[in-house]
Length: 239
Image (cartoon, one colour):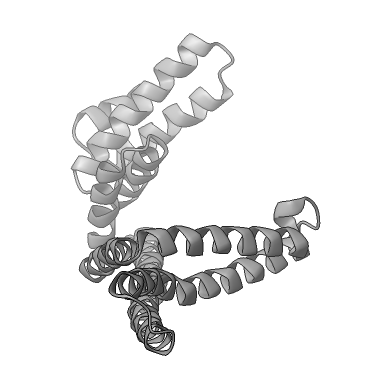
């Protein structure tokens, strides 16, 4: 390494420190001996860091790049902002891209969260509406059939359970069929990627859900409402 360059850097000249760091980097990249290569890279990093600490904007930008590759994102952000503050064009452009990506990611997440919240609110409303309709139908049928008190209770129990799930089941079946259709277009193989497979799965799981809800009645409806409402509150909090 050039002795004059080294002495000038040691005297505190930040531009020379930066130049020396680049020289060590170039020497390391052309070195075949791994031990020497590593030693040159260490020297390059040392001088680059010293130049950066003395507010050399190019050195600060290079430090940001080095820290990013080392996955030290906090230090990378620190040096990138320092470099931009000192007028480095590349650092300012990098920050602008980073900020735009951050805003876009936030908006994208907000849109996804908004859609999820709407689906959850719809599911909650379908459960409530279905349960009310199931209760009304069971009462009407009970009156028409002159059921006993026990028959009335059983009818309302089953009516609320099935009613509170049937609209959601149909909604889930529709979504499952759409997913199956989309998957079949992309993959075109396997039961999970076919319309028939999606239809069988949707109908089968739907019938099982109706039977279980018919047995569990209001308990199942209340539990599902609690779960859905909890998910709604979580989504609202995250927004």
